[in-house]
Length: 250
Image (cartoon, helix red, strand yellow):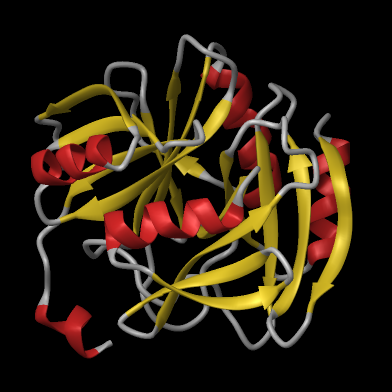
């Protein structure tokens, strides 16, 4: 994904954790990824690494609701994209709203039931650090019906697709990799991947913090990876990415 300048239309640019206990989540991810947090509201904060924004954490008023990560996709015209969501049989679950001093956002559900967000950049394009340990590295959409997912997101953002491999398809925007869409046995969902310098060590740290390793760590074409969930039940992937000196200076 792009690391500087504007994110291309349709590229995952931001992730938000909604959780029943935001202070608890901050302790968990602070210990797991060395994140620091800047409060943005009574129960909201932006996570940073090396001073760059990497994610957001917010507390849901319904404490019985399960914790979850929501992937946000970049768009240049939020109202137009929201209209396209409806026209393509998706739903807008939160109408476009202002995020003071940052941009505009909306929340949606695709035809398969997968929640996602839309982000129109203002002063903030999205994540300021990606593809590094402790930062967003990839996003994938998984469902029992990937063909419907591919059709929907192509209508929204003009995705083009590489030839499927084992049922998974690489989606491109302006010729560049954006995300992947593939089969999944559970309900449709977007799955965020966070980079780590050592997946096995990160998985052990996650367990010690009260999280659960659901599968792996195991080798993949993209790096050693593990499917995990945090201590409140939010699922994500730990994936090995090579650290770069530029991260320290970002």
